[in-house]
Length: 176
Image (cartoon, rainbow, N blue to C red; front, side):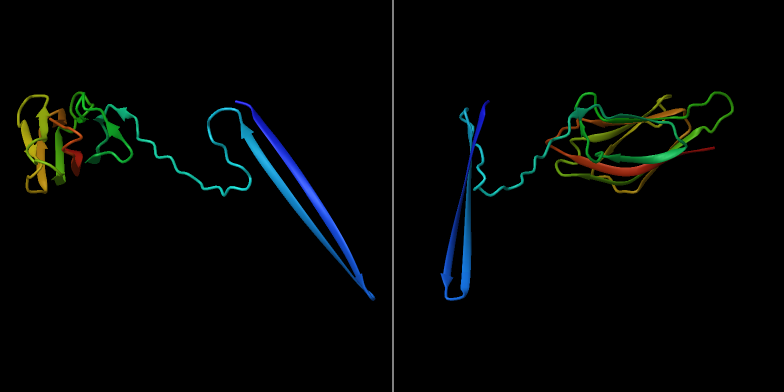
C-alpha cells in the first residue's frame, strides 16, 4: 500500500487604508488530500473522524476447575469466559490430605436457573466412593445443601449446550 499526501497552503493578505485607519485581513486556506493506491477508502482531513469499538468474543476454553482450598465459591458461567462443550464444565472438590484429616465436603447451591428446558442440562454430583451420587435439575428448589463424607466430589454439567444456557451459584467448604 502506497500513500501519497498533497498539501497546499494559500495565504491572501489584503491591506486597506482609509484616512488614518489601516485594516489588514489575512485569509489562510489549507487543503490536504491523502490518496491510497489500493481500493480501500481512506479518510481525508476534511472528513470527520468517528471512533469505533471492536467487541471480541472470548476464546473457548476448558472449564474444569480443581478446588482444594478449605472453602470457595461455585458458580457458572464464569464472567468473561466461554467454555468448550467438551469436556463438560466441571468442578472437582478435593480434600488433599492423607491420614487423620478433615473428611466432609459440604456443597451449598443457592440458586439454579435455566433459560431453556430446566431438565435438558443437569448438574451431576459424584463422589470418589459413589455414595450419595445425585443429579440436580435446574428447576430444583433452592437452596440445596449437600454433605459428603468423602475425599473428592465432582460437579459436572451434563448435556450442556450454548442453545440452552444455565447458571448456578453456591459454595463449598470442608468440615469434620
